[in-house]
Amino acid sequence: MTESLRIVVVAPDLAVEDPGDEHAISQAERSRSLRIGLLENGFNLVATLPADVFLAERLGQLQPDLIIVDAESEARDALEHVVMATREARRPIVMFTNDSDTSHVHDAVAAGVTAYIVAGLSAQRIRPILDVAMARFRHEEHLRRALADAQSELRERKVIDRAKGLLMARQQLTEQAAYDKLRRAAMDKGLRVAEVAQRMLDVADLLG
Image (cartoon, rainbow, N blue to C red):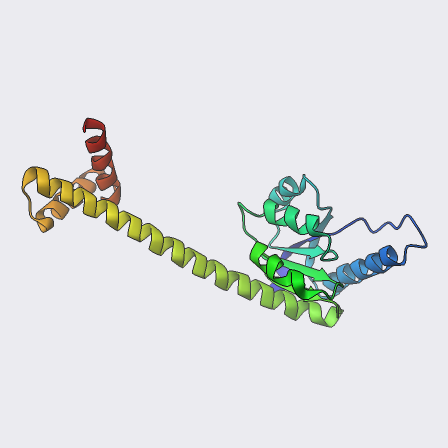
């Protein structure tokens, strides 16, 4: 299953302008190792993109299954761009960094990072890391959808209760008779009971 994953890596340019910049050289080497590890593990690395204002558009075109942020944790701009770019279409985000300062972990996870990996990058670790990240993301999405469904059901129930109350007050119906009337109207119009109830409340509000 993991072999078919379409992965985009968000990382700085590998080109090192200053041959004496040891930090840039180390970052470039680690970034190369990550990409080689992905390929060696059979993952589908579809693109490497910079973290810029065009990231959302590019991700929208590529439609990756998973995003890897390859950056030092102090480079928060990269993470912010990725989070903004995936706000409308959530995807698992894995962040690899050499920075051992774990004070940023909580903020990163709160921002939407599925896995935050500090140092110790090796080809052997990549597959289990991404497997766990995908499993965790799917579990969280399942919980998110379940919560959204429960909230939606609660809102619909309140709308139906308001509409029943209106019918009971204006037409002197029992609660069951009011609900039956809403249900018949919904069946006749091919709508859900909550939709009919909301339309009736809208009309009532309009007429006063």
